[in-house]
Amino acid sequence: MNKIKNPILSGFYPDPSICAVGDDFYLVTSTFAYFPGVPIFHSKDLVNWEQIGHVFTRESQLNLTGVGHSQGIFAPTLRYNNGTYYLITTNVSYGGNFIVTAEKPEGPWSDPYWLEGAEGIDPSLFFDDDGKAYYVGTRPNPEGVRYNGDWEDWIQELDLNNMCLVGDSHKIWKGAMRDAIWPEGPHLYKIDDYYYLMIAEGGTGPEHSVTIARSKSIYGKYEGCPRNPIITHRHLGKNYPIKHVGHADLVKTQDDKWFMVMLASRTCDGYCNTGRETFLAKVIWEEGWPVVNPGTGILELEQEHELERYDVEPETNCYHFYRKELDSKLVFLRNPSENLYSLIEREGCLRLYLKKQSLKDLDNPAYIGIRQKDYHYLVSTMLEFDPTHDNESAGIAIVQSNEYHLRYEYTKKNGKKVLQITECNNGIDILINEIQLNANRLYLKIVSRGQELDFYYGTNGVNFELLEKNVSSINLSTEIAGGFVGCTIGMYVSSNGKSTDNYADFFWFEYSPIIK
Image 1: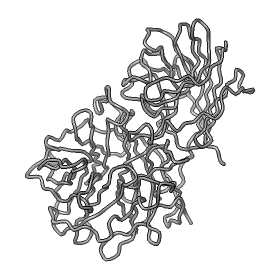
Image 2: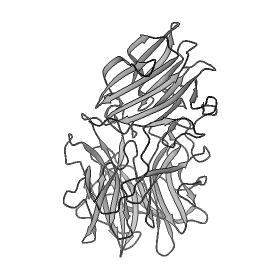
Image 3: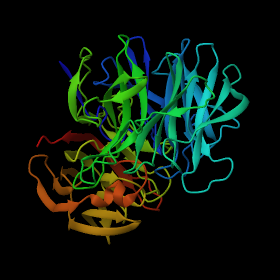
Image 4: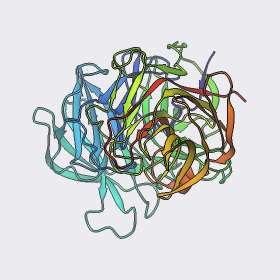
């Protein structure tokens, strides 16, 4: 028997949207300030997924100049209709809501069609049986926002030929709770005789939930499910290890089985560093309403699953640099500048060129990373780097935001080469430890055990010394740093405000979970 092992996408993969095309499933998630934007995944069993590309691979599609870590791309929705794939999303920093299209889910995807009059965020698309298309979104209360989160869900017909809204917009629901806050992530479905509107409400924190309403007319009136919310973990207490459940999407298999993908957060010692991840649950229908994970009503880390297992190629734990392109799991902060890196200057190496920009800047630093997926992991790299001027640095960084990150760097201070650990806490650098070291080739290793990090270094790849032990990582959590993202971990270089032609060569980059 195949099993669901949650999360189905570990690490910072929030706001999942899913669609079925035959017996294939495709899924996308939010990416905020990271580039390429919006990864797209494929599966045949809803449990085992492989990334087949990104939706946004060009700056003409996605401008992230100067955006904060929790700005940029919000809540994409993926749909398929009459041979075309549609993705609609919000760039909250530039331009608002837009649609891109593709003939194949792996792309290439078109440049944006911007939707004039599409106020608000979290847009979705619905294609009705009569051939009409609709925009569904969430916007501030047009009569005036009376309290924080006083928004509403609304709908308007969409002209696909001209990619524009037509006719009048209609308010359709404000959520299940009286004076509900943040009725977000709306998705519309037609099932039998009803239109179903499923949303998230309660905010993205501990009160997050999924609620649903239905109507026999697309414009309403919508009646809420008497059992709303249909899933939440708000009642399980602050110590329950899965929190923030919400922002869901429904999908039906070819043999009429129903499932739901949604976001949730795993915590460690009460803090979440991995961000909001993608989880899967079973759904049945009773009396015209969905029941999520019947018998338990909450997300489970493991449960049985009827679909035949779909095997995908296991993910690599070690990234090498012999190909002409970077692995699709590796991401940049904001749009990467020209001459940021090279894979051809030195065979088998990633050459990162030092830039003035640092991780503190709302810019594109010389940083290439992957998502943190575990609380027990090992990350390591081998690099060659000769800092020629003070403050030139290269090494590993763990990044939550420009104000909260941790750097393990080989650098030069007062004319001496040093290896140092620095925590940036609320924008202020705190030196944790440093050691004088003269070695152009370095092996760096960070071992995470829960919320504590151990830092090792070596010069021959065999023998390692401990620089610092039990460094807390809770300041890299959402609970302290805020925002909507999880941590990424990657290779980082900087000249910290000075011009230079220097660079660092990274021979490999490893991220491996540690099995407890």
